[in-house]
Length: 113
Image (cartoon, rainbow, N blue to C red):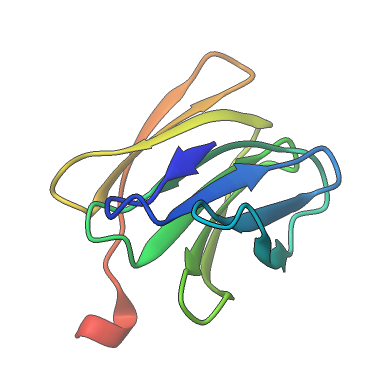
């Protein structure tokens, strides 16, 4: 689970292959993000709060637009993914997989170019 920098929302990953966005003030679910084909093991939110990054047992890392609830990018790796973190620069993503590998990836938002 991850919390947005403003403290308004939480994002959870689930064994039902989805992410859920929660309003922390009301406790209600705002939306469900679907796209993974296996368990979502880890989520993180970018420092600016605009993107969610999810790591799944389906070997994919996905970047989501938090406001629109849409998938923006997908990266397929060789093993199931267990961990994801984003560095404070907002573009460097660290991912750990089930084979013990750690990947250091750079995300550049195509809409910002």
